[in-house]
Length: 115
Image (cartoon, rainbow, N blue to C red; front, side, top):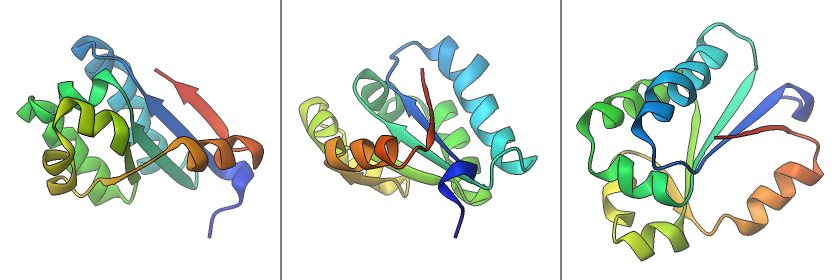
């Protein structure tokens, strides 16, 4: 199990496709593949849930993250509001209420990027 000091949490909230492709997805995948971080947790929250559910290219990137061993999570409240919980779950994303888990990540001292 990864030390919390060697765990990166990427909180993706932006509905901007360019941000996803040109920063969020590139850094997240490379952080795991190149060993920059031992454990990487990727959280889909807010408008990003709606964007991801409707974009097959972004879904392919999520599949690569899953195959690389990145932990995939999404906020159930947001996904339910957008009506996309089922689509996210089909991508092997753990869709759950994220307020408490995110708070725990922060209190444990895990490094967090918000995009």
